Length: 62
Image 1: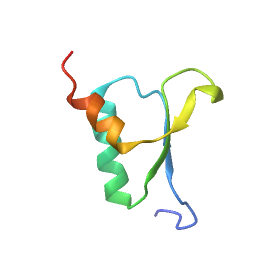
Image 2: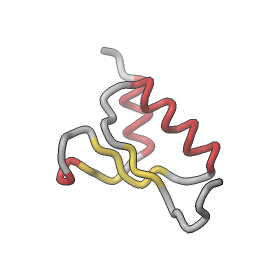
Image 3: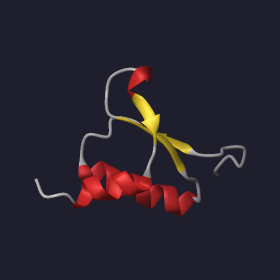
Image 4: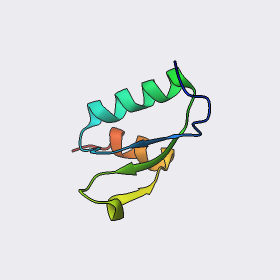
């Protein structure tokens, strides 16, 4: 059961599009916003989650 005291999620090790897509699905399923993302190794690598930038990165040509 989900703890209702939670106000959001932090997604770390965000180094792949599949992980990002799953993160969005889980966030929607449990009705919690993603607050921060981290793509590095330390606490300094966390940054506020910006949904617009995230979608742009997912859809960008590589």
